[in-house]
Length: 123
Image 1 (tube, helix red, strand yellow):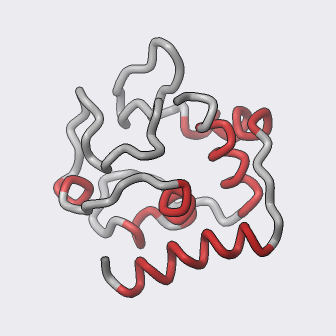
Image 2: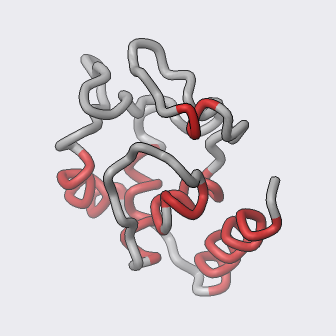
């Protein structure tokens, strides 16, 4: 793992912990509306413009069936922990340079915590 990625991951994790941020899954469901233009979750989730996101925590990046990932994502060797998902949501192109995800990131730590709380409901 490169040094700048490690700093980004630690910063995202420690920042939320230090601030005592607790995610709200209902607020995360509302925030996910933006994500839903590319991603699906739930019983009938399918890959579309982006991969389906059920059970993403613990999944190796670039491995969801039925989705064609960028070479950068496939070779990232990331496993999606909540810490690196938080970092990716904050700055996707810093975590996986060359990713084809067309998203600039979320600067609000509470919104990221809310999204992660919502994603936990899809194990």
